[in-house]
Image (cartoon, rainbow, N blue to C red):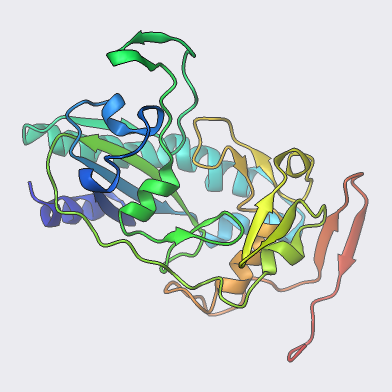
Length: 277
């Protein structure tokens, strides 16, 4: 199976995005972040993505439903039920061709913090999905820390497949979707995002963890352990990118005044700016 055949089959199985990061792009990573600490003969890291439905953000945007829309279909079932079927099926295709394929979720928690074997590498190897997605040509990390693609903006989740099959890699891209934009920074009610210069922001994770504006704790196995995709910053990013990405809709996402809660949970509502403001 070559790269073109793999991508075609991945799309047939339900992947919305797929890219390949060959060995030379991550060969110099430290052992605790290197795929070869997990699979010594790994030649390629395959990164697959499944889009998050825009409608899954709707309940949070309106402030009327947080769990059965985004919590289930945007996060838990998406990443824990729907997506693994695609990952497993694609691994199955690779192993039928004689290549070993190791499926991995979008987030990898640290393991035991001690040496077990593997040439002295501690058993807490953790791979950075966003790094590999960028190395696989799927997009790049934006100012606010979201991984952005030209097709969906931040509306996707990622998973990895390690394989000993040598595959042609995809060219990394540097997107300019954040150019002249700081919507995520301006939208954060707790000021957990702060500008650090050169168009970059830093995230205060402790303060972010107190956010009651759609931020959800997902757990270490998830692609976004501190899930801000549907939080105030994430939804502001969604709004800012809707005319910059490939998948577009007939009507704008933001239809009403914007609600927000401060650190004590007090709610305020801000009217939508008028056209031209």
